Length: 206
Ligand code: HEM
Ligand code: HEM
Image 1 (cartoon, helix red, strand yellow):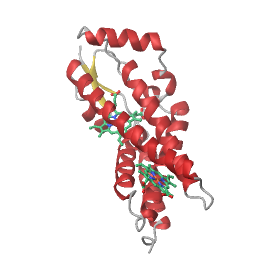
Image 2 (cartoon, helix red, strand yellow):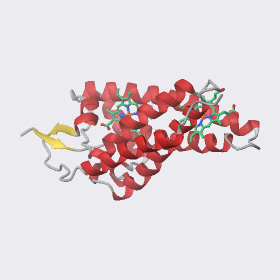
Image 3 (cartoon, rainbow, N blue to C red):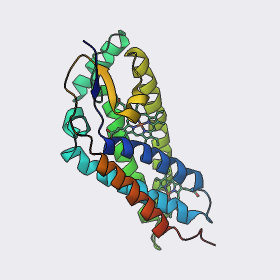
């Protein structure tokens, strides 16, 4: 029997969408020196979100844990093969192919933010600044692959993965859903981001 099963807890969903907003907004103002304050504040928000996600990967709910989407190359290849045949195995959490983009996006996000902090220092080298820019572009490439992957997976499995990232629910036969959603933590994350924003950004640099 197909049931609606809770897969993504609230902090994972809040993390995802705040990450999209902070990355997108940070990119939009990245090329203006006058708006650098905003760029840096949005970057720090992304860095904070990523640090949270790193911890949540160890102590979070079942499908948010890193151990639930730690696949070896053989498993990824086997999944891709079944995908090519049009009959991929269904995973309730991240599937092996999707997990590759998830690992890449989390690591690249970290790299972009760390090089950004280094680029902010007075004695920052041209190399660090260049690495910051290049890694941003690499990440934009992986984000495009991520979106294509989400679209293909949604079509092959006939499920709305994007909707699931909002509601937390997926439809499946298994009953192995999560029981706790940690709404309070999601609310705390949003409050922390808003407080940080107003505390950090006074006005754009003149
Ligand atoms: C804590 C996080 C971040 C900090 C502290 C930071 C800081 C900086 C600084 C200081 C610069 C100017 C470098 C220079 O020209 O001297 C810069 C440029 C840039 N940043 Fe960030 N950044 C952060 C996160 C991000 C993120 C998340 C993105 C992607 C959305 C990003 C994309 C860029 C890009 C594309 C430029 C180059 C702009 C240009 O070529 O003029 N940064 N960042
Ligand atoms: C800045 C752009 C984006 C970044 C950096 C990003 C990154 C990520 C990451 C790291 C995850 C893993 C979530 C976790 O376990 O914590 C994820 C999952 C997901 N993302 Fe994104 N994402 C971006 C944009 C988007 C957009 C625009 C959409 C929808 C249109 C989307 C749809 C999804 C979906 C559906 C999942 C869950 C996939 C699954 O069911 O396995 N993402 N994304």
